[in-house]
Image (cartoon, rainbow, N blue to C red):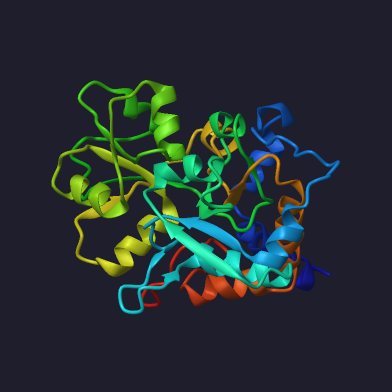
Length: 296
């Protein structure tokens, strides 16, 4: 019996290591802590029908690797562009247009009906839930604190972000921007990832709060950049309240039927292997959603 018990225990341990870290937050946080707001289930709108007949406009920002314009083809591309277009095709929406703009212009464009969906992946937060709604999750990742090699600002935990003399870099209008504002820490926000990471390289900010996948993509493209991600655990509130555990897409609250079409499509694409295939295409390891060196 002992001959199979030890291998069985080892197998269980190995399986435990493959469970995404966000799962622990669902066991340790009450439901009330999550910002998720249920949409209106009594759909009476015809937005999905209109989109299926006349097409849809996706709002994107220059936010590599999520959404951006391919510099060679000048066409939209990215992880979330691929997921959105796959979901729309599954849902029977074949005509897809796009509008590209700064990240912090996406919500105003959605609310003014210049776009129909924000296709750049977005965190669900208390402030955003007041005006817009979200699709179901598409894929998962987490936050990262990024510093210069050697950590000259001596950032040891998220609590250090409030320390005097520490300046945090974020993207304008992002969940990181909202979280750092909530903390009351000194912050400088940027319009795009390139400016954000370059500012850290040049020492104009002490630390950057970003998505771990976004930094991994940056490092894959810039392996000699003098930046590293710190191995520090995020506070629970960053995962449970500020949405740093998954990617979703944003819609107007009134567009109930379109949201349900998106949500059903996401469920199917996660189940049938389409979304894992897209993640692998972009060099992501579906088990931890970090970039595999040499694939991006």
